[in-house]
Image (cartoon, rainbow, N blue to C red; front, side):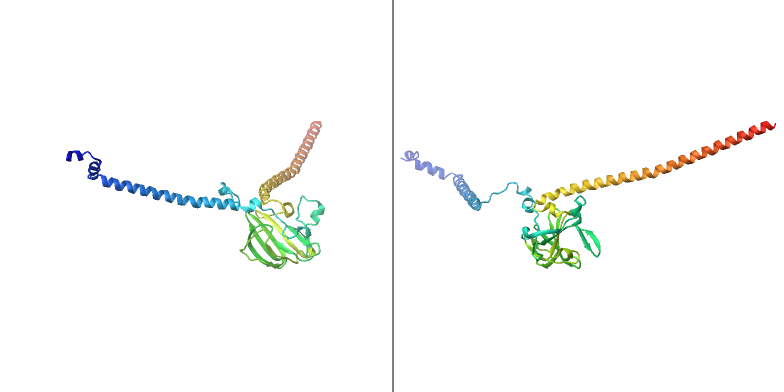
Length: 295
């Protein structure tokens, strides 16, 4: 009877349970299964927020840019240089930027008379058609670097922008900003006023546009992208190179012109010396002939 029971399935499982390796192997298997379940659950939990974020972004119309690291500042991509007034149709440029290459009429309108002397304007005077005050706004987004009161120019506000661009606002009446403030394009800076230096312009704002510390003609760049100012550096370098070459040419011509008279004087002196020598030689010959005749 016992021999018959040895071959039954119950006896086989009993033999397996008696093995020393059975329960450790069972524990390891259960642990592996539990660990796999935990890892799977964590991955599933992480995927759910990503999917939700993607849905939210699609609903908001947002699409990520794969080149965000190389993206340029917003001002460089989108902003254009605007006239610093709220209504350009009612604004008038009464004093122009002095340009040596401009026509004589424009150059005359770019001269400022102060204290019986004419000065070349480095910016533009903007006034309203009815000579009334008006709001002065930021031509570009930037940071207020200076707010001061000048005895000749009136209240002055200076803004710095990206890529070494600066805007300068003078002849302001009321000032609405302080140094250090971040300003967006179109934000109110103050109101137009009067000053002593540009009193002939009446109520106005004096506006300068600078690139790399050099004043440029604002009228050329109004309603133009800021990136267009990048060409100025190359143009200035070419102009300076041309000026240097012109100065060198003038210096060379001056040296040549000063050398020619000296050469002519030397030639004249040599001619005079040769003439004197010839005369002396003739006199010596005559004296010799006279001596021979007497003998």
